[in-house]
Amino acid sequence: MPRAADSAKRFLDALQSRLRPELFQALCDPVRVALVARLAAEGRPLTVTEVSGCCGIHFSGVSRHLAILKRAGVVRAERRGREVHYALEAPALATTLRELADSLEATWENAERHAAGASR
Image 1 (cartoon, rainbow, N blue to C red):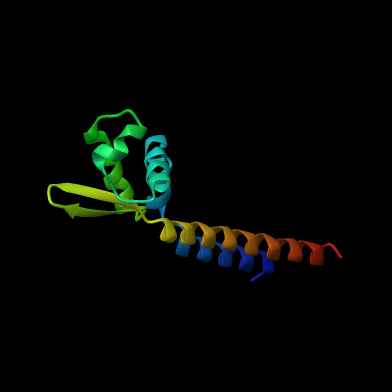
Image 2 (cartoon, rainbow, N blue to C red):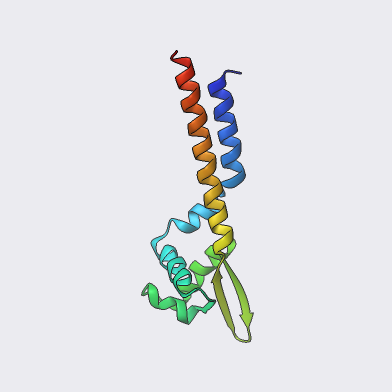
């Protein structure tokens, strides 16, 4: 297998191990990004009522968006009596995004070294 194809395979393997489509689908909506930002800014678990002030939509819509973020592992939910409190899974999210960035950088660096060697 040529070096470029080998590098591409390693890159694809690294991406597939870190890239979860549900994560990026959850983060591609502006309302969900606003909810994540609100939870990050508060730094503590919030109820749907508390978090909903950031985005100007009905509570039921906020609940649906939070459920999508929860399924993607971006937030966690804890029931306290009749209320559910949502908190950002900041360390896990940061780790996932950092690992993805590291994989991209390593692949690009390897490709650049390979290209430089091939041009000699």
